[in-house]
Image (cartoon, rainbow, N blue to C red; front, side, top):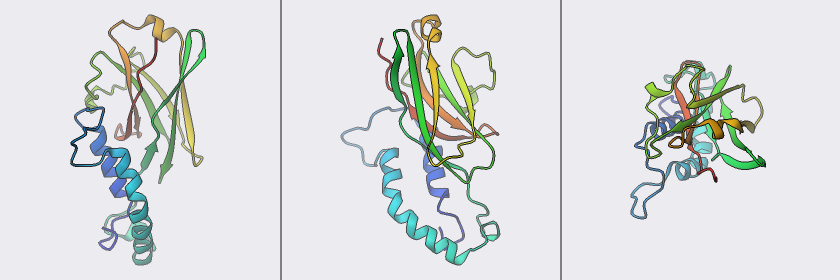
Length: 186
């Protein structure tokens, strides 16, 4: 792809898009024929370096390459959940961004059916949605952490609702990354 004029960032961007649109299976099967998405990102590291060198050698002005400018890529670590007080939980999402100009929005979702990932149409932009918490970030440092505090929300939420997914979306609503939230202890 690099020889053809496509920046190496198109590969992780595609992986993250496919992961976000996946069927929602949360754990890898013992009999899986393909690596999980996190493993794909780790395996990509070595080939990425070589492809980047090849691309920059052939296309010093990225915008002039057949693929154009590289896409925004967000690498989000699995969310960390910790108790910050007796009735308060904090969910931390650590991420790094590449090729970002502007901001991304981190969306924490609750769903009654934990087995299902959100369809992109269900990621609403309604700020009064009880099933989503949102934060904007510029993702300006090499490692940016966004924290959600769940205090009264857990007490107010319906018993069948569970905080399940974290999505990172761009200004146009395109999903850049998705992570599964570990089950919150009661």
